[in-house]
Image (cartoon, rainbow, N blue to C red):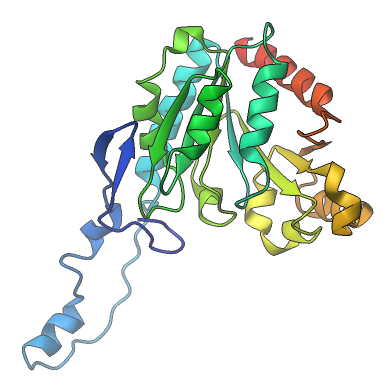
Length: 268
């Protein structure tokens, strides 16, 4: 279950046709969903005095352990794994299509796509010649490390240099879920407004890379570039910032060069 919003309780997810169960790890602390006080009221008894119980194990402990296993696997294989996040419609899939095409002959790219439903994004990437595994999360608003581990089994990772995890379009819940990636990449499109980093600081603060997308539409959208950069510097001051248009190709070479260099570091 999501730490932040409680989505996906009791749900299943599908990886390219194979069904998997999503485990609500918080249920062990809640029994059948009734607190002792609620149980007492159900039998006409007075509610007992409330006590605070401190639970020191992180609710994300199982996810974090799997993420570390994923990270170790990527390091052993010399794979650069990046987790790409954004709100819906920021241009993730188009950017990945153009990035994969621009990296041909330099890096071998594969993609794990996360969406609540449909395989539209995966289909677009397959048509571009990119090996893809689709995860349909059902009611879950984020990907988890276990999902990524299972999806990896469907890829020939001996033929992969760059593994891109295209996360579910959401700027809230995915911020706290480590997938084992080396780089966390967050997109901000010019059509969304320059204040997104201020509205969703945990996500943008967690990013190691921030990309301003759809720069070709900035003028039409009335995008304040200077303010957007100031907001990113304020929240994502440690992140590498790129500005690009996947449609026109402006800024794409610098992004691709960065990925090649990051892969070389991942192999080292």
